[in-house]
Length: 385
Picture (cartoon, rainbow, N blue to C red):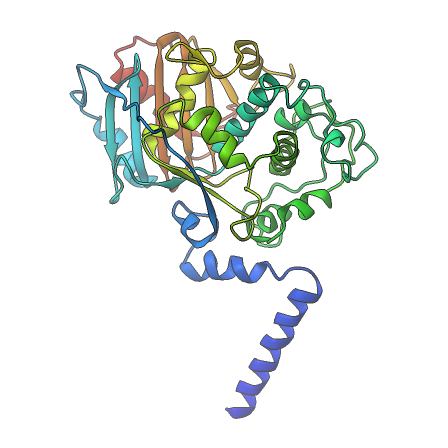
């Protein structure tokens, strides 16, 4: 028995040392935060295990108005069963800028924070538009190397900020969420995410095609931080969160200590009501209560496909045409969605722990279509088949 214990301890010590020698020491953080807590990927409350930077709410909050028919439409039993099966924690429908329906599950409420994962990519794209408005960035076509001269790879001189926002970066990147040793997993746990990103070369000609890569948004965040000479959290708060009247402070995960870099590709924790505000901002062409927060031409460009072969993506926003209606949305891992029907003045937010299954011939998982149908039905719109 003693010999077996010693063998085990030596083996563990060897494995521990090997992780450090090979540069995979970040895996230990992943092991403690994810796998030893019973998860196999990131989860809604995992922001509590990381350092965060506060995104300050408005001094004078602007609560959403209640619709005259607030919560009078009962959720269909099939939708409630689906919410239960997919572990929904929040479902919100906003019509004409008024909350028509909202329901929370599993102990969550209207003020509960939840990790939104890649939803923040749309926010970072908005920060790019704001940086152009403010004169920190020339245009979508400005080269990334103007701000990140240490960028590597044979095409590093060519990639633009717009290429990063539209997922046409040409970056070397393996977008795998369930592989604990992938670069995507490393980005979640490393203490220096900037160096990790710099180590990913631009090895394919950028600007040619849509290829979804979280590293592209992180590189965009690094470039913006240097362009604006502010922390992303501060710029987001000053540019959007406060002017839009956010009711609650949000939290943005960092790569290390309080002085670290925001995980620009993910990890923004807030609540369903405040998440909906970016949907309203884009629905209203960049205006909030009559004030221009984002140039309308940038908004229009953002919600149109850049590439004909990939009509599902613009600049930081996912796109669809559903039952005769134009739709754009923010999407996050595990099924975090802010879905906008601009022609119907309709926004729906869903937060939860599981997403639906893939559908053959469809660009999105089944849950998105279920939530869109629910919002359309609750809002009383007759839809086309």
